[in-house]
Amino acid sequence: MTATTATEHAARAAQDGARPADAAPGPEALFDGDEGVLPAEVRGTLVRVLASRFVDGVRNPTLWNRVLRHEHVLRSRLHDIYLDLVVDRRRQVAFTQQLELDDDVPVLLRKEKPLTLAAAVLLLHLRQEYDRGAVEGRDVVVEHGELLDHLEVWKDVDDQNPASFRKRCEHAIATVREKGILAPVSDGRYRISGVIHALLTAEKVDAMTAAFEEMASGGGATATPDTEADADVEDGTEDIVDDVVEDGDDR
Image (cartoon, rainbow, N blue to C red):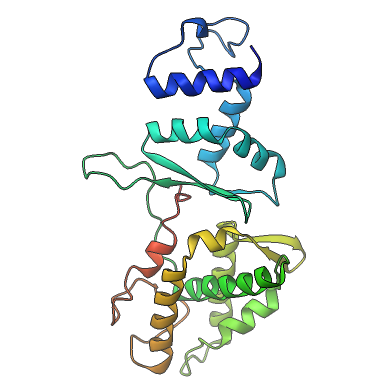
């Protein structure tokens, strides 16, 4: 049985819930007592998709190509556990996402703790920079110092502790890096991953922009870099960033 045939065979088995008669442990069994129906490559890809925040085709072209090659089977198996597979071919990113079903359906992926305001502001800035690069058909690389400069505008006028402010801004950058949105390309330089476009939809960008503009104008809560972005502020700005990070990558 070829790898392609095995993949198609597994897909049919996943659809009807039956174990194929010829899938008993044999030449393709990966361990004693193996009752799985997927080839080794598909199993490995499924595990990596589940374990990763997302798959970035630029950083990991091998894994990306495997996701594309086995997309149908991966999605079928993820649907078995109430997850969906989101694949953005244009931006070469893929990630899992919790399906929104009835309340009694168990939830596998959980939200992370809210981002700080500085991290949320940074995400919005990165999305805007990514869009500019997309118009020009190029990858966007940003400098560490540039990100710090952008966050400087959110410094409270009463903040008399520059070192503390800098520490909070560095933490915001580190948070975004840990989420894989900033991919290091050299010392102090990062490529913005295309996943930023999938995480921050146009609707979320509009909502965040309006909320931050209100904060900056004094119409909302006092904004400092370590303020939680989903704090109770006016005009429905609460939970904005919780929605942003509700990307299926929260593990």
